[in-house]
Length: 306
Image (cartoon, rainbow, N blue to C red; front, side, top):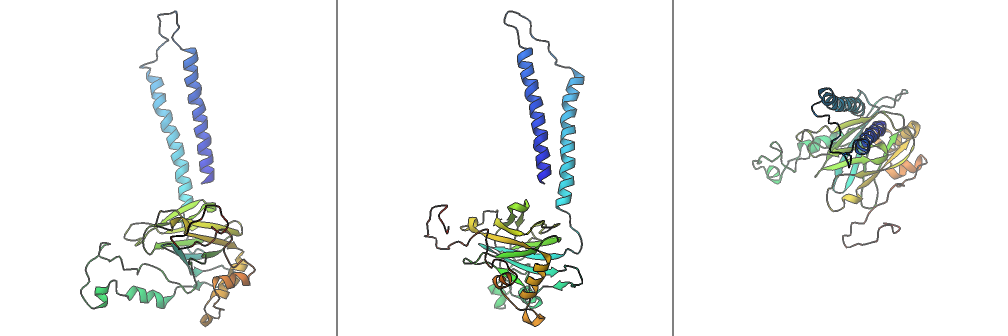
């Protein structure tokens, strides 16, 4: 995407210089002379020239369109069997991350992270108080569903849930294909990691909203901590709805997952912070900080702790 924008800007500058050059050339060398009643030579109804004026812009647009489609197809490409599948759930005003499946290769086998019990419970839960009391449910505004129906959300055995006191950290491996599955529990949000040059809307009821809530990245190239943000105005604390992507080596990631696994599966059942500390990483976010939910709290921008 960066290369597409760079070359598009260069092409626009070249075209701009050409247009400016022709404009000043016409102004300077084809002015009506002050002491002459004659107009400069006119080129109206010059069919070859007008055809060129029409054809050249179409060629330019076609070239830009071609490269845009090539880049878009690359960005939107999805391959079978990604190494890591992450469930991303946005809600006012924080994030929940879960690992749906993990396959790092190297003989480790594929880990199925779906919490079957929690998933079954939410899918069978009554969507409204009327259903809970045995009354006939009224059809809702979302293709017959009520806004209380959250059966489309995903639940996993290893999850990280953000709070007002803790920035949620999504730990991911470098050099691996990663798939994200996005859903919102309330209003529209957006999943945005500025340094990764992508932003995706996070919709409630993605299927009913005809939105493609699944996308992949080919790899994270380097280790580090990268701030993530909500980029869709979603209410009072929208500007503070941040998270962090912590990119670690595949070996560290495998260790992290083993530490996070439930004890029933041979894991240590550690929290995100405990597992990060155990693999030598900062247990708290380093790219952003928590926010206060006190609506009466006021502090000048840039003050330490803001």
